[in-house]
Image 1 (cartoon, rainbow, N blue to C red):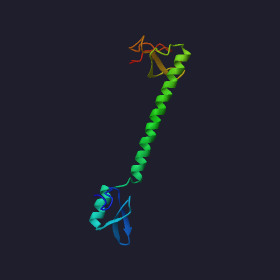
Image 2 (cartoon, helix red, strand yellow):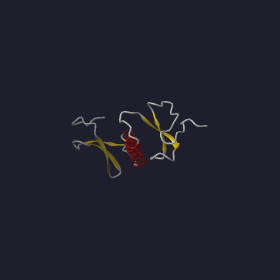
Image 3 (tube, rainbow, N blue to C red):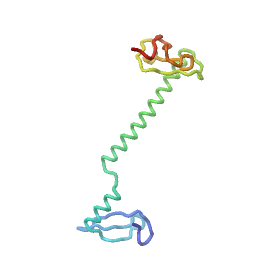
Image 4 (cartoon, one colour):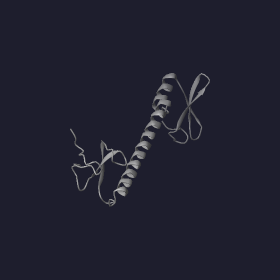
Length: 131
């Protein structure tokens, strides 16, 4: 539905006593009064985000921010490892999932180029695949 005067699709519902009226959000001109059924349909179609939707959006945004922060932390860990063991920045290093008491980050680190099967942690010598 468009505004009768300016053709805008930005329509708003305004309470006017016991009635609901539809007005243009851009030019502010009255469009028509809505009955109860039309009011419910308009609200359902033009639903503004409720608190739960806003909370979900906030959670998603924070999860994305956290994911980005984790990636930045991972990059910094790799940079520190390369620096500590004097690896060339172009050499491939991979961080495993196993705890490593000798590693500066507490996890096993593998030379992904020289040892693509991750058979020997650079710090402790244990393989990634353990039984």
